[in-house]
Image 1: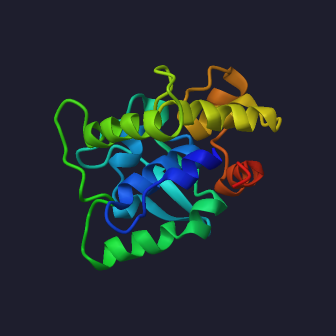
Image 2: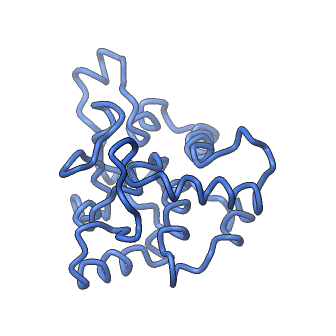
Image 3: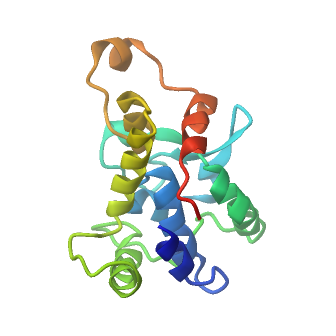
Length: 189
């Protein structure tokens, strides 16, 4: 992952090319979820900065379980994501990545997905099976190797929980519990 981070372009001209892969790596969010973020989707919940993954406005999610709260990993805060959000807010932007153009078929992720594919082949791997979605695999495996519970990983990633006990009767994890798990996730950058 250090190769990925080192190769990312400067956030000055096309911030989405810097931030979207980082957010994918540290949140497990899908490309479309990240590309469609609104400024209002990054907010404090119980005093913790979170992504509010939702279907507000023109956004569409893959499943019902995809609606969720994902705390911001401390590395994203350290690198300045809150400042990016505040800057977009001060400019009056509704969307976090105003450079991305929406297509009816796939939302805002088409152009960035194509760019990431080229970027990935040039800087990370020649393996044609590796894509932006591979960041979700890295995220899930990182938490699994740390011994995090499958239900917690599923909730962070927007997967449903089939268990009657925790899926039907248990409420969602509180942001502070999710953040505690995320804090353990480190890619030694």
